[in-house]
Amino acid sequence: MQSIVNGLNSVIWSPALIVLCLGAGLFFSILTRFAQVRHFGEMLRLLFAGKASKKGISTFQALAVSLSGRVGTGNIAGVAAAIGFGGPGAVFWMWTVAFLGASTAYVESTLGQIYKEEDEGQYRGGPAYYLEKALGQKWYAWLFAVATIISTGLLLPGVQANSISNAVELALGSGQMVDTGLGEFSFTKIVAALFVVTILGIIIFGGVRRIAHFTQVVVPFMAIGYILTACIIIIIDIDRLPGIIWLILDDAFTPMAGVGAAIGWGVKRGIYSNEAGQGTGPHAAAAAEVAHPAQQGLVQAFSVYIDTLFVCSATAFMILITGAYNVHGEVGYLIQNLPADVDPNSPAFTQLAVDTVFTGVGKPFVAVALFFFAFTTLLAYYYIAETNVAYIRRSFKVPGMMVVLKIGLMASVLYGALKTASLAWGLGDIGVGLMAWLNIVGILIIFFMWRPAMKALRDYEAQKTAGVTDYTFDPEALGIPNADFWVRRKAKRESGKT
Image 1 (tube, helix red, strand yellow):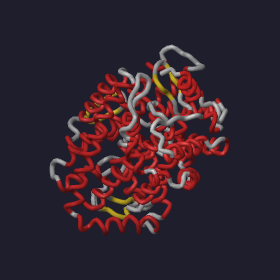
Image 2: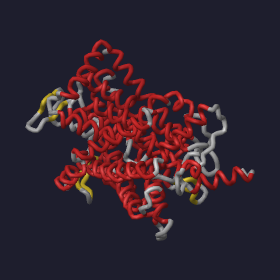
Image 3: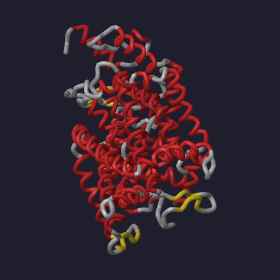
């Protein structure tokens, strides 16, 4: 199984996908005149500007839902893997893909807003919706929807669950080994797996609004607490920070494992962490109640900064400053500061880094933080998969589709929590890669056909310059086709209806 997964990943994550991700980010950054920098202040203002409605969640809730997907295992175990296989220089490429990817996140999330729909009393949207309406290729939209259901419903949840169980096992010990139908596992892992599955089942049967309310409380709390802990560790060894930053920059272009390893692992884990271009962010963006599509696009671009430049950087600095890492080469270790049995695909690097300063507390603290990080990501995955099932259900109704999805996701969590980290991450990488290929190619083609996200940005900037306080969006006047939701909203506005 592991060899099959590795073979698939060698094809999906070829240099072509790396170039596509970085190239698309640079392309959209130039076209938007680096909106991720120019509108930084506007991003902050918009965070709390939107209000929830009966049909849509607030701007901040949408940010929290998307952040719950972005801020997860990738920020703790993913950063460790990037350093462990790509060297310290991989962190630079994580920063690069985040900075450039913020513009890609703007484009895909704005498209999610432009082409969203009202479905059973709530807003839904995402790549499947805009690929059908803007691209005009329903088969391609279905392909993305199916790939996303498989990825977020079956492949990716196992990574989050695996990191939780590994972190708990490292913090509390393995305990007695238990023979099960899936193999022999530690008692600690089994208990952790069952606990996560049970809590997950309770919440996902409550619907998207319960997810939104849960994440808007948990996401800021866990992120702030984690970053504060990292800041304490960094401040204690602040004199080493300039040297660590230089190590990252120097190793990014002349790494011991070769430039390809640093770029490849940095981009792979960067995209896994911030999800820019993967196509997950537009689902939450489409659910927001906003006056103009560009507003939520800018907010989602800011979420990439929070994920990578803040949370991932905090993890990287902790690991590098404390020296709690190894770097694996093709024929052995390039750097070995830890025992050989420490798995770089697990959260062990981060747990050991915190434990060097907070002895006896670091391992359980990271385990608790990782639980919240990963658990909210599981909720976001369910919401994304649910949205794509709803998309398919519009024209292909089969009773019980949502129930099957929920059971399948819970089974994936149980399986992933018990299996090896390498297999879980390998399956997750397949899911991320498939979605990224389909989504980025799609939004590039849409750009050359209609340029809807660019037109929306120029329209929003023009209204902002004119001092407008009540923003409006008229897709027909901008030459944006098939944006039916906004056409109907404009008609209602003009007729005086609320």
